[in-house]
Image 1: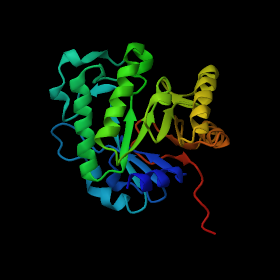
Image 2: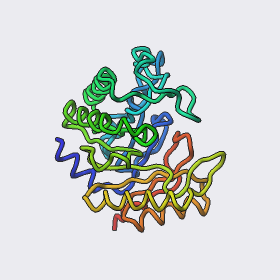
Image 3: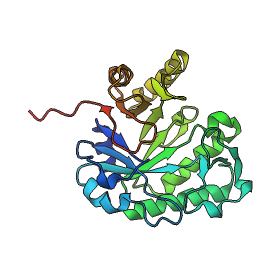
Length: 262
């Protein structure tokens, strides 16, 4: 099963990161890779994605979002995380704290979430907030060990790393994703600083040369020249673009063109 999933991942062109919304009411039929929230929120019952997972998997690989670098206070497992497992608040993201990934119990908790998501039927995990290693360089080795632990816990699942360029070359993952490569949200939709774009693209090119699929996620106004630019430049690099709104509560408004059926 793992090899079949990896082969399918290599063939993906269109992808939809919609883990900020309820996929039940979305038309996601045109995508080959879909990222949803498979964990849900505390006291809200099963994640809405559970209701549509079998249908989505008929035509797409479906990954669940999992933040391994931060503690999200709204998650069902948040009450199990004492302050001693964290390193302070994440700026501009209320309700999130950096996770001290050196803590063995945090790594075990993430492995438990991974196993539960595998049992629920997901094809893989979309691992977010790996840039904790950029904000806290001392955590880099432990973060690599955490992801290796997930690989050992759920070898049948795909692992896609988001925003982890500081450690991506060391991670046992099947693909890499990165936000804000060309356009971002910063008190409005804005072009990313050119020097940051250059650094990101250089790093992503190196990973692409190793055979890893690269997925870019930019934030721009629907129908704007910025959205079109982000798609065009991503495709020129051989990456797979998605351009969306900040909340990620709807399908991308700009993406790789659909495959020709001719």
